Length: 101
Length: 473
Image (cartoon, rainbow over all chains, first blue to last red; front, side):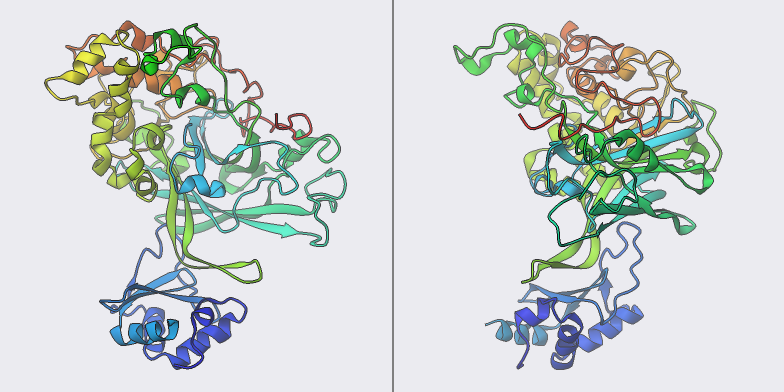
C-alpha cells in the first residue's frame, strides 16, 4: 500500500489530499464513507449527537482519522467532521498494521 | 472546590473545566431564571500576555430537565470563536480598549447561543461579543462599561453574557484539603497524633479564591420558556414548578497535533465535564470514578447512588473530630448500615413535599445529580447564605445563588444536620448545625470576604479583578 503512512492518515497540511489518497488506496474506506453518508444501518454512528449537535456535514473535504480499536477483531473507528463510524474489517486492519511498520 | 480541578483528567483542561453552576429566580426580574455556568478555574488576574478565554474547540452547554427523568429537555449551547486582528504583535491590546469594537484590541472572542428542544435547534444569537479580560487602568480603563456592553438582549426576553467575572465561590481550600481541617474548629482535630503542628487555636477561615477570576456563561430566561407546559409556575407544590439544571462541556473525540503548531479535531462531541450540585465530584465521588462521572449524564446517576447514601466525608468527620459528632459516629457504626436518604434527597431526587413546610423540589424517583430549582418560590427579601438550612427556601439546595455558602451547607448536611428529616430516631449533634468554614459573618452575610463585588443585577457575579491592581503574590 504505497503512499499510505500514519502521517498521511493523520496529517492536516493536505487534508483533502490525504483523505482522498487514503480512500483511493485502501479498500473498504470508500464503501465505509458511503455508508456513513447515507446512514446505512451497517454503520454505527456512535454518539454523534450527544450534545444535540447536528451530525451532518461529514464530507471528504474534512480531515479523516481512523483509529484501530481492536486489531484482533478488525474493529476500526473512522472520524470525520462530527461523525464516528465503527466498522469491522480485518483485511483493512492488516493493511494498516503493515503500513504502520 | 465546588468543582474546580475536581477530577484528574479535567484538571489538565481548564477551558473545559466547569467550576460552579448557579440557578436562581432573578431577584430583580422575578419572572425570569438566571443560569450561570463558570469555567476556567483560578484565573490569576495578571495572567498575560495570553489572558484567559473560552475554548473555541469546546462546546459548552447548560441543560434543563423539566420532566424529572434526568435527561435534558432544553439545551442552551454556547460556541466561541476567537479573532486576532494583528498576528504580527505579541500584544493582547496595542492601546486602551475603550469599546468592544476598539481596533486596539487584538484578540477577542465572539459567541453564539443555540437553544435545542423538542422543536429542534434554534439559533438565538450569533457574533455576540465577549468583553476583554480586566487588564488594568491603561488597557481597560472603563471595565464595567465594557462588560456592560457585552450583556446582550436577545429575542424572547433572553439575556446573555459570556466573559470574565470575579470568582464568587468562597472556600478555605488550604485547610479543607489538609486532611479536613476547619480552621474555626481546628482545636478539635485529631491531628493524626502529630505534635507541634501549630494547630490548636480557633482561627478565621481563609478564602482561597479571593481576588481570583473565572469565565462565566450567564443566561437569563423567562420561566415560561423552561417549563414543560410553557407556563410560568405559580404553585410551589406543583411538580412542574421544579427544573433540574446542569452544565456540561464537550470536546470532539479526536485531536491531532500538526507539525505547524496547529491541530485538527474530528469526530462526535463527547462530554468531558459536568456539574450539577456543588462539591459532588469533588468530595462525594471517589478518585477512581471521577473522570467517568464527568463523562456520564445525570439520568444514569443511580449507578453512583452508593457514594451518596454512604458518603466518605460523613464517615471521616467523627474520626477527624473525635467526640464532636457522637450521634453521627454511632449512626455510621450501625447497625443498620448507613443509608443517608437525606443526602440522596438533597442531591439526587430533590426534597419531597411534607418534610419542610412550604417547600419541595422533588423531581421524582429518578436519581440524577442536578441543581433543582422550584421556580414558584420567589426570591428571599432577607436571604440567608445557609439557604434551606437557614430557613431560606430560596437558597441552596433550592437552586443556588451566587452568595450561598454551599461548603458550609453541604458539610453541615453531611454531618447529619437534616438527617432527622428522614430518620426521626436520629438526634443531630449540636456541632452539625454549627460547623462552618469561617468565611462569613453569619447567615445574613451575603458578601463573604473576597466576594464583595457581587452585582444586584445580571450577570450578578462581580467585575473581575484587574491584573494591575491584583498581581500574583
